Length: 241
Image 1 (cartoon, rainbow, N blue to C red):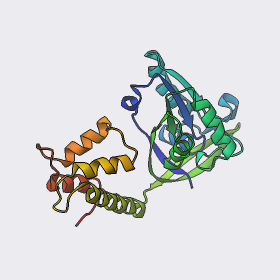
Image 2: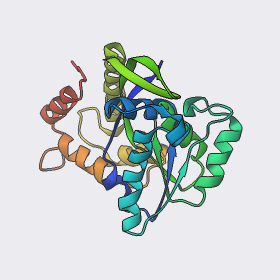
Image 3: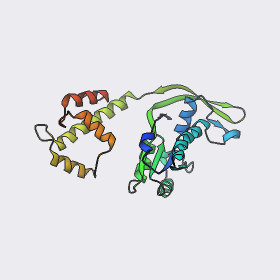
Image 4: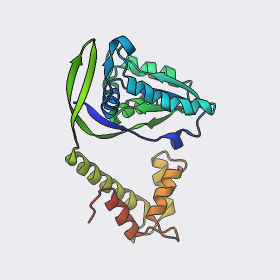
């Protein structure tokens, strides 16, 4: 069941790193890029088993990074299994060994591929960034052309509404639990509770994105604004009574 992926602009996420390793899953991402660009999935006599559109996409990421002095590298493992979501321990160890020389790993793959990298590198200082967004699953028609060329015709992208609703429900539940752990009974922020909650999450500070999110939750005085919370959560698809 191929996952439909959409490239994300991660230039802002990578701007503070001096070295980036681009780790790609050679299954779903190349298929998606080939269909999105209406180009061949495989042209064996021209590019071997590599997909032209996907290789061009990787180069479009590397080029601006290298122009500002960032060292880049790539890693894609086809054996024993090409799919990052099913990587063996040997493949994960290969990633661990390569990533030690880099400050960040950019994963071109689905959420499960990113999880494989995160779990593998959890005991290192290497930051894992996901470079593609999961949209749904793809239904496509495979076409073989002479000589040794494979095309993919996209029929439909199937978006899993049930999955999105479940994710929204889980997000709402987590938010409610977090607020209970960080606030007093009357709903006001308790900074002592916040400190304990952050320590339990092994949190030492906030990123710019987290600060921006908190600003959306709070009023000018820094107090939680229920109306702002409701608007933001509804915008994210969370239905909270």
